[in-house]
Image 1 (cartoon, one colour):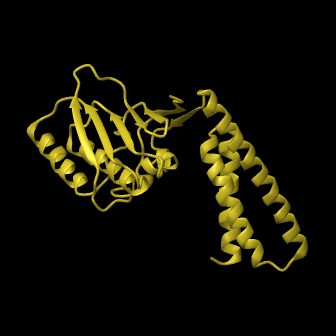
Image 2 (tube, rainbow, N blue to C red):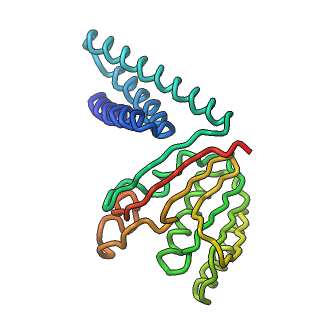
Length: 236
């Protein structure tokens, strides 16, 4: 990107970082601070105005300092076993794909993911679970197992999950599915200690307006149903 493009992108990210910081959404704000300052430093390389360069460098140092403070805060609270974040997703809001909500917790330190969701029954709900599996495989390079706890479904749902089980097996990932008649909780638990609880489970998106509408494939563009997300770190 050009220096001007880097500058605009940096300002947008850093503005969002401050907003998220004030909302105590620290894991998100940390990412925005670090990515924003990197773009800001790239922009500085293409500048010639000394006063502007000095001003941007001072801002970059301020943001990096805040990012380091957040990093220490997260690590300290995780060690105490009490780190939490809360997110309210409003009706018709966009920008809340699975990657946006939990992608920052996925990485090489995730060996397994346990998904509890009673509503993996209808076709679109099975597709939501498939999208989550795709994200896990892409982000978690050491992933070995996905466990799904859900409620019983029909033969068509069984066929879909069997096909997915076989496909994941070809990539070295085991999918195990168990059924519960009393399941109410909806959560995603990761082997690295992070737990994400979504009020509506995976099914918090509105249906697409049509097959040729934005958001049909990219869930960041899909309007959401109102729900809450609670994120915490389970030290054990």
